[in-house]
Amino acid sequence: MIEAQVQSTDTGAIVFDRAAGAVPDAAWFERVHGSPSMNETNPAAGRGGVAFVRTPAGECALRHYHRGGLVAHLSVDRYLWSGASRTRAFREFRLLAQLANAHLPVSEPVAARYVREGCRYRADLLTRRIAPARSLGERLDDGSLDAVLAQRVGRTLARFHAAGVWHADLNAHNILAKDGAASADESVFLIDFDRGRLRKPKLAWQQSNLKRLRRSLDKLGARKIPDFDARFWHPLLAAYDAAMARAGSVPSLIGTLS
Image (cartoon, rainbow, N blue to C red; front, side):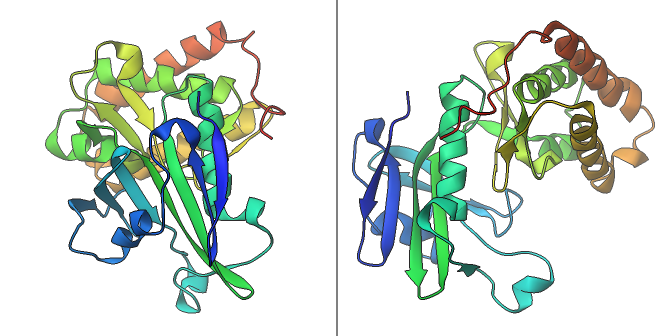
């Protein structure tokens, strides 16, 4: 179980998993800003990309929060301060901890921090690296999407939706398929839960989530593949619908996030 502990710093605070095996400090997070100590980066994984780094707690994905849209022209990575518990990093850490403790396939949170600068702050998040794994976007590009993977993705999405988990940006880059998984249930993960939250399960937002994923796949070239629907999308939806029907009695997680 992930147990969150908060530690104050000179410029803000760090929340971390007490069981991670080491207490993080600011140096764990500075690598995201271009230090040569980065192993590699994945620009497709979330806004601004992700740096894969080695830490005393193991290999992690390190993400610096960047703003998007028109507001990014005013401030690339600064957010309006409204309290520590409302920072992007702390909120995502808490949600990921809740999902991981409920045995949902996410990248487990290791640590998150905010650095306050007057009425604004910037933030970073460390999660455990899922490897070896490739996103649906990468698998679409190399032609390795098939009906078996589609069914696993459909069942995984149903698990999240039945539990009331709303992903704010469900796209092909934020679904990872792990290579060499011991079982089908361990092969598909959802990542990047920035702005995600728990909601009362309802068909409207669940279907909107699926449509967002489909738009993402189409944008990456799925619409140009003649048999894409038959080979991947229809098996995904069929597996999703079947899993949702079986999950009718699964309790929602809403109300359990402190």
